Image 1 (cartoon, rainbow, N blue to C red):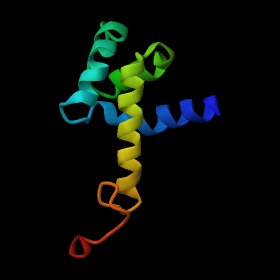
Image 2: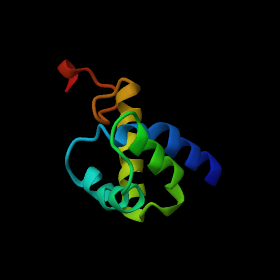
Image 3: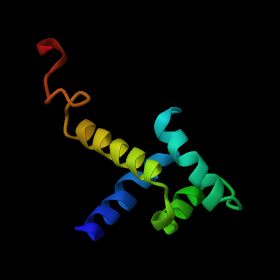
Image 4: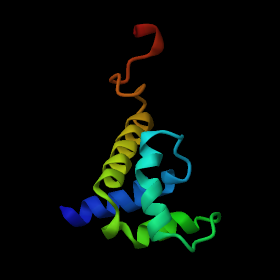
Length: 92
């Protein structure tokens, strides 16, 4: 189960980190990025790769933010409107 979660975290969430809009989620991981990836030049997926390589050291806040972002993306991919159960706009 832990391995599955780690795999989902790595594959599903880490790519979104660099694209995350400013806010609590990005802020939760900013300290980790500065600490764990201090010498990494941004661009080309290098920060994402650094976070992936250091996922065991991520703070609980960053892990939570990434998990929440993954759930949000999963809902959006399933055709739902932000967790509205797939309701169409005219049905709201």
